[in-house]
Image 1: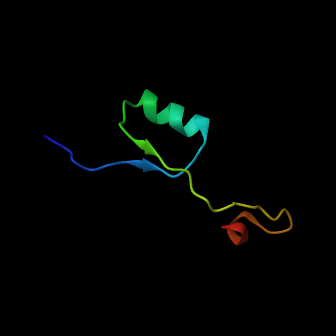
Image 2 (image 1 turned 90 degrees about the vertical axis):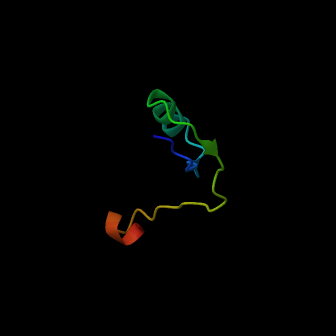
Length: 48
């Protein structure tokens, strides 16, 4: 079965890159330009 779908990793995380390589996935890294900031005063749900 042939899969023509492309996987784009929108993260510069070395760990995520390593995990995808370990799984044998072919992917392209295109880091997002959005800065993710966590407000320590908010709950995890509110931060998302």
